[in-house]
Length: 472
Image (cartoon, rainbow, N blue to C red):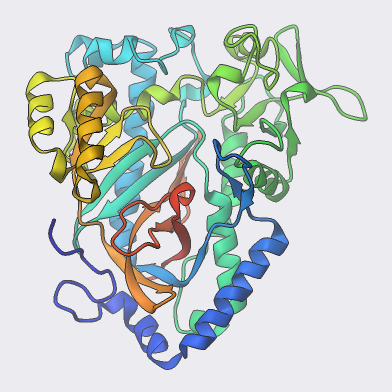
């Protein structure tokens, strides 16, 4: 694996223009000041209650996500490229979802194999032929981006179900503005704090045709035991909408109502942070206590908008991901603006043979995996781990894809030993409404705090940092 591209110093070791003011500031500030501000940030996160839980832990304790006080900076031209690429990507994902649950032209054309759709556990046959309001399936997308040089950005993953992390993007900015006003004064930074307004405008724009001029929007959460509950309550508060659980909703005559102290109130748009399986016990899992019985009948009748639509998982499957360049060409007749990471589909014999011969060099991922789990990073794995993965691959090749080990870019990060480069990714949040696509400049930068680690997930020891996009 080649040496990683550092976003501050570049390939030649020269400070890149976007980082000049930050590099100058870092040369002036003492390490003890940075450490004091880092501890202040931790105290603020703790006081506000920004925590997450890791499923599967014995005690499932709430944790703080480590926060790095050195921002990641993108120039206006870099962001312009990303914005255009993200808009293209999300337009195509919506077209793909509409087609897969409708005419299926892409399957008939042989671009995507039929079995990859119909035998996929996240494909929802209940959505076949189902019209969704305004033909929008994917209202909120979190697209994970990485880079390996100054000019090339790759989409690492499309998160099309219930992408999380936007509360951290907003809180990161607020804390940085509070702790480092002097650093802010040296930059012109595009704002992110309008995200809640943009999200609410998006959700209201996709209300059913039958909804009133000012539709009622709610945010549905699985409840306080969900690992992202903090974000659910945070967003509902920022949007000024009700945070509801399944028991707060009921369906009558194919219309969804919310129980309130003033009596039932009709609901037009549900921003759901609950998986398909649990949304309606009459349609999916009958043992679900998290959903609302009959919700899908109201949805089928066109009386409520679910954001995101049911069945969007078929667009963020890691095997489907590998076909995205062809999917872009099929629907738009354009070349993808953002590249895909080269991907071997282990379901194909020649791909599997190559992967088995090169396991020590590759990253192997479960097709339906998330959170950095179920993954092999070949160059960092011991012989026993590689042997175990080899057996898994032979047993269930369809369940895996493999990719080269990218030299993910690094950013300066404040760690115990001082300021050091650490690998990062970026999750911008893309909102698709009836009127337009909205993207606030920036997103959530996740950072692998362990030296040499490529795993940025918070559940595996990763941290977060503020992302600054410079205004022109």
